[in-house]
Length: 454
Length: 80
Image 1 (cartoon, rainbow over the protein chains, first blue to last red):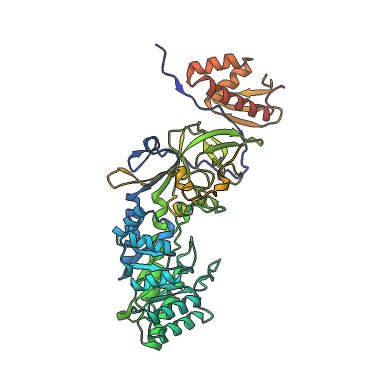
Image 2 (cartoon, rainbow over the protein chains, first blue to last red):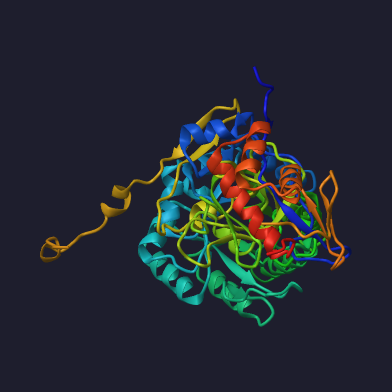
C-alpha cells in the first residue's frame, strides 16, 4: 500500500523584515503543553468539555509550602490567610486550609463561605469597606478578626459592642505612602496624616473593643519588595506607639497581599517570569523590617500574610479549542478560540501565555487571538507570533488561577466545568458547568409577558 | 493565476522579489504550492499533488489554499 502521508500544515508566506522591530515580538512557545499533572489535555477536554478550567492541587501545595518556608525561616511566627476573593472555589480554599491557612474574606457572602468550609470563627479575617451590621454581629459572636476600614464602621462596632456580650476583636487597616505608585488611600486610615492614630486612640479608649492587630494592604502586583519593608516598618512604629502610650501589646501585624505573580503585565518590557520577585525577596524585606524595629523581643507580633495571586495563579490553566482561523483585512492572522474575556477577565491586564496543546513546527504567524464573543473587545492576545493551528486543535492558557474564577462574567454564554487534578493525578469536577436553568431559575417573567406571538 | 517571472523561489522556502528587493519565507507546504504555481499549475492539479503527499482533505486544503493565495496577491507576487 502507499507510504504514510506527511502531516499537513497550512501553507504560509511571511515577509522578512531584517532588523525592523515589530509589536509581535519573537516566538515564545517552543514546546506544546500536552498534559497537566500527567493528565493529557485532549483527554481532559474529551471528558469535561471545552473550554475547561483546570486546577493543579500539587501546584497549590508546592507554591504554598515554598512561600511558607520563605517566611518561616526568617520570622518566628507566620500565619497565612487565604484570600477568598482571589479564588473562592471551596475545593481550592480547603486545600489552603488543609495547609494551615486561615481565611481572609471581604463580604458577608465570603464570610459565610469560610464558615461553611469549616473555618473556625477566630481564624477568619474580615476585611473590606462593606460589612453590614448583621455581618459584624456574626463576626463579633464568632470571635473573628474584624479589620476596620472607616470611622462609620468603627462607630457601628462600638454600638454593637454596647449591646453584645462578646468583646469585638478589631484591627485597623492603615494606608500609607510606601514609595510606590499608585498609592492606595481609599481603604483604611492614613498613617501620614495621623488618621490611623486617631482611630487607634478611639479604639483603645473604648474599653469594650479589643485591639488585636494592625493591617496594611499597599496595592496589587507590587514588584518592589522594599515597599513591603516600609509598610512593615510603619506598622511596627504604630505597634511600638500603642505599647508606649497604652501599655497594650499588638498581637499581629498583617501585611495583606499584593505579591506579583509570574504573569506578564501589558506594556511590560520583560516577561513576568524574569521580573517577578521571589517569596524570599518579599520575606526578607518584611521580616527584616519587623525584627529590626523597636518592638521588644517578647512582644514580637504574629506576621499575617493574605497573599492570593502569587499562591494560586500558577496552579490554574484554561484549556480551549480553535473555533476558526481567519485572515484580517490587513493581512494579520486571527484565531478565534472558545475562551473569551468572559472567562479570562485577567486578559484585560495580562499578556497571557498561550501554548498549543499538540506538537507544532517552528513556523509562526503574526496573529491576533480572539475569544468567541460577538463583542469587539473580546481579545485574548492582540499581537502574538503564534504557531500554525487548525480548527478543532487545543490551546492551554497558563497562570490563570487568580481572579478568573471570581471575576468571571456570565455574558453571552455559560461558564464551563472546573476540574481539580488531585495529588494522584485524578481529575475531580469542583464546579459543574452551568446550564440554562442555572440562570433562568432566578428569573421571574410577569404573567402578562408570558404570551408572545412571533 | 501566474507568479511573476522575476520571483525567485528556492527549494528551502526562500523567496526573492528582484523588482522590489523584498524577501519572504515559506513553510514546506507553502513552498511546494508556490513552486507548482510557478510551473503554471492550477488548483485541481495542485490539490491533487498536495493531498497525495500530505494527510489532509479537500475542504481543509481548499480553505488553506485560498487563504495562502490571498496573501500571495497581497504581497504583489502575481501577475494579475
